[in-house]
Length: 209
Image (tube, rainbow, N blue to C red; front, side, top):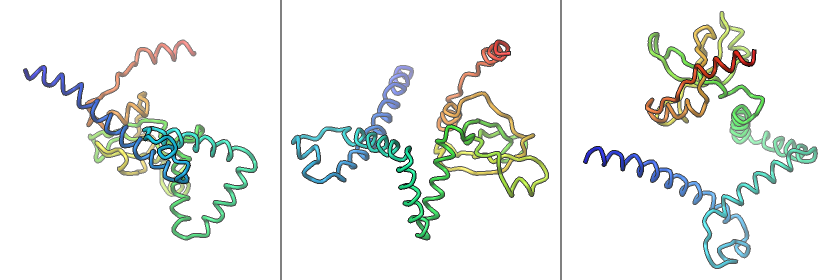
């Protein structure tokens, strides 16, 4: 009985949590429809509520914004808007910080959060998973006696909080696992360990050479 109960829970609990999370996200994005004039809101026009229209509207809005800011006129509009925000003390600091973080994470050329590292933390002999956030550390690098990298050590099971520390490059071990696999391992409390395909990596390296 215990075996069957555990097998059943392993099916229904992940499925139920996934459903609740998706429903919460869809419900939150559906509230975007409230930004439309009441006359043009789909629920009033069609007479029924269709879940997910807010998600579609959000995607269209993001794509349209991206298309606008990608051209010269859009860049000028964004520049003017950011100059206006820069004059507001609290908003200036908050907006600039969030934008720098998003550029570091989402930029295709950025190296932030592209590598999973293994470092000895919080003391020698104890190892923690970390993500490299930066190699160009400016004043921090200039005032240290050796090359260091900035790493983010997330907490578990909530990886959105954690610690940022500077670690000597010589004490950092770069892992082969993808960032997504590293996050899964942290969120699962170390239970979901990604498969290490060392042999395949060696074959690829020898083939490319």
